[in-house]
Amino acid sequence: MAQRHPQPTTPQTAPAVTTPTPPPLDLSNIPQLLQQLLSDPNLDPHTLAQAIERLLLAQTLQT
Image 1 (cartoon, rainbow, N blue to C red):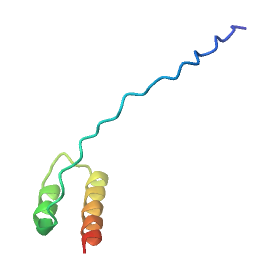
Image 2 (tube, helix red, strand yellow):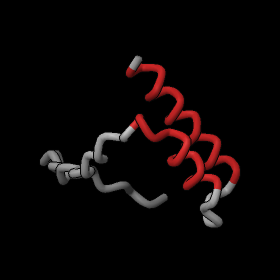
Image 3 (cartoon, one colour):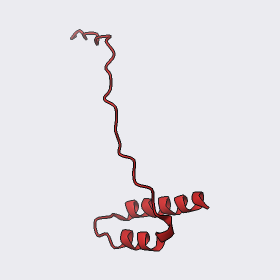
Image 4 (cartoon, rainbow, N blue to C red):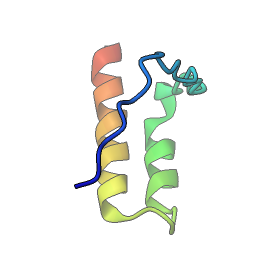
């Protein structure tokens, strides 16, 4: 049986995840945003559904 070497106890500092904050959605133009999503040939149906869901949720939260 191979003996396992214990992992060093020095804590690994994970690099800070710097996700760029998305620009605020212009919710006054939801029909145009939906049209852009629907006309995007690269979006699969699941991603499209998620994007529409987020748009509608954002619109709901803003009112």
